[in-house]
Length: 344
Image 1 (spheres, helix red, strand yellow):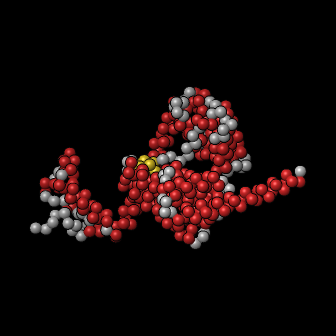
Image 2 (tube, one colour):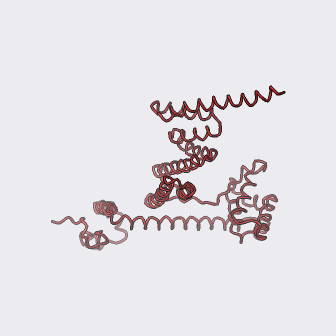
Image 3 (cartoon, rainbow, N blue to C red):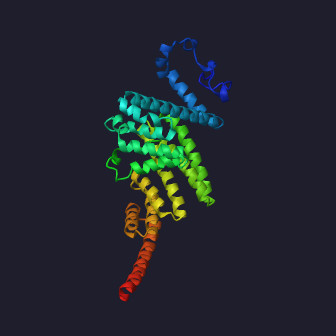
């Protein structure tokens, strides 16, 4: 007897057709019968058949296309849900709050800024909509954009810099959240990560060709994907974080190659925040610290690498170089300041 679960070849790329559905009883099943059917032998066989279908090379492009489509769909749904929440907050605010923000809601950037009022930890949207300092900022930004003195991106950056300044007594409560995160199930997450890896692959090729600015743009696109998504399980989130770490380190490598020590340290630190024992991150950050003449910090990172991997030759070599560079700097400073004091 033929295997009833074997692909007949008459479906899409040899997939399942209605003829593969087993006994007539299954074909006549009602919707209420499906949970029991799918949890039984038929469900297991169907799952196995689908796995085989998904693993065929000729189906890879089709599946990736579907996954990307689902990812975009999830993003749209999340944005719609966020907009509905925002609309509800505005309509439930007091009259003065609604009147205050009304002139700014037609502007895309200012609407995003106002949307962040929803992030108030006490769920007090009106507190921000009635805040005179915030309203002054909104009015100033709108006026400068209307007059063409600021682009939308510049206006958003200006407002972010102002509200995040420690000189503002309420700055710690403000959370600018122009990018909304999307929680994805595993199948949709796979499509997002495939897209992320493709962007990183392009970045790696450009980096190898020493086209650093172009590589940086690709890495930033890749980072945008993994910073947008959230996993629905611990395993999925771990996979996202692993790719975030790799992208942070890719970006750090570009900055290191361009002698941008501060940015190198910044992105390495982001990677290390997620994985405190990341060897590449520690080694790369030590190089950034060395370029900034922060020798003690560089030494601490390199010694941590040696603690984690006593056999690490790169850390050993960098420690040796660090000692020489630090000694040379001390001698240079001694000559410089010694000469000044001698003249006095």
